[in-house]
Length: 202
Image (cartoon, rainbow, N blue to C red; front, side, top):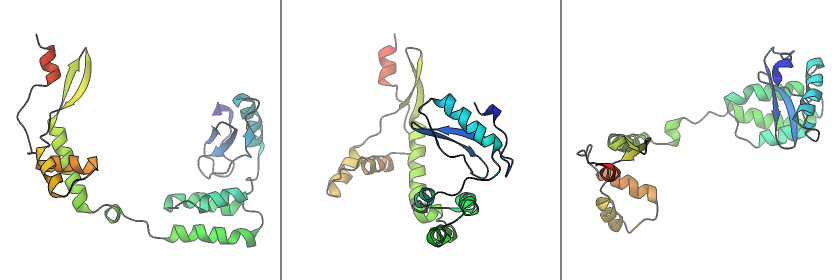
């Protein structure tokens, strides 16, 4: 549907037609400028035809709307949003006294150091989860049921986790219980025939 759209006159990037349940716009995938929203009362094809005429003849960006600033400033901005914020500032045509604090708030968020993964998840936790994942992968195998492939994971003894749960006063968090069961499981287990395979064997 977007084959008849010209490249953006400002950055020469490809435009994109975006529609939700109520309205549609054509937006540049490079600098982010867009057409005004068009209602979908007449259908997607009619909305596209109207927006195509606007997009292919536009020479100036659409002015920044107040609701855009209010919506963006409430989000957590990162360095990847720098282009969007600069486009909003460039398209702003007035109300600098009113919108200035919003632009300042967005700039302040962009200047904040971005958290690294190790600050969010400790390295020890990542290593333990990786060890549990490896144990699951070593117990997984592909079985065929009625000509369809299925992933089957060999049973893991959960009795040590149950004992640990009693020692810790009980827990209702399934993830913690499974983690304890995997921590107590050996690195590898002897090959055990799947109950499903036993049923299907002659």
